Amino acid sequence: MELEVKKDISVVIPLLNEEESLPELCAWIERVMHEHKFKYEILLIDDGSRDRSWEVISEIAKNNPNIEGIRFNRNYGKSAALHTGFEHVQGDVVITMDADLQDSPDEIPELYRMIKEEGYDLVSGWKKKRHDPISKTIPSLFFNFVTRKISGINLHDFNCGLKSYHKDVVKSIELYGEMHRYIPMITKRHGFDRIGEKVVEHRARKYGSSKFGLERFIYGFLDLLSITFVSKFKKRPMHFFGTMGTLSFFFGIIVTIGLIIDKLYKLHFKLPVREVTEQPLFFLALVAVIVGVQLFMAGFVAEMLTMNSQKKNDYIISEKISYPRKKVF
Ligand code: UDP
Ligand code: MG
Figure (tube, rainbow, N blue to C red):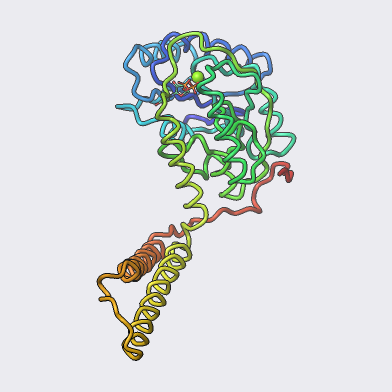
């Protein structure tokens, strides 16, 4: 029987076409782990690379039993790669980093220490001095500002690829779409709110090119909307749809009553009357009533769906965790 070795650190690295960086990156991580005598594993998640990344991974893994590779049959995105990595990790502390050598493995020991000794659930890197084009840094300032306001989490750099997590966190959260940009929000939503930040060194991309183009802003924005919406209303969709629907419905009804009273009044006093179909207000009221009923129904159906689909074990036991805990933000 194979004995399972307890690991201190699992490094999860999502990658897409990063063949040149991988050997250098792995050698560097190994060096750091050795110096600090960590028991570790490196999980390289090949997110559908079309270059020689997978061959390179197989080659490196041959010489180091601590390195594992997982390969997707196609490109699913960074979130999916991270999620798969999280499902497989065994270490007490999980570190995520990009494969392009923009994140420095020298940060690992301190990120590990902050989780282990200071009791953080999540420590997010902050690329204070960034080596990226301005087309990326300016929008990112805006995104971080909005996300900070919406989430109430005081981070400067939500989307930094270099982060460390307590194992319980990665085993609880689910990532999909482009949700990797908002991991701290998701983490907080699951009750892990000891979220810290560490200024990390950021380096210019040495090999290859960035995998995210301008579409990052559109998708990023839509994901921000849905994550905010889901955090607020996933459990009670009726609170949103029901309120909107009822408001719209009553607005329509009140306008209709107003129109009827107006007509009766004018008829009574023999004033000139307009056909109801000639009044814009009539159509507005009609639409409001119909939309109101629709919204209400949507809320009702969504509510029934969530009632049926809530997983039986959709909760987290907060009393079992035995690592030092500390309230941050
Ligand atoms: N990546 C990935 N799947 C994708 C896109 C990117 O695994 O669909 C990886 C990429 O190989 C890198 C990390 O995610 O390791 C960050 O990507 P990139 O460096 O292109 O982003 P940037 O630094 O430009 O924000
Ligand atoms: Mg990069």
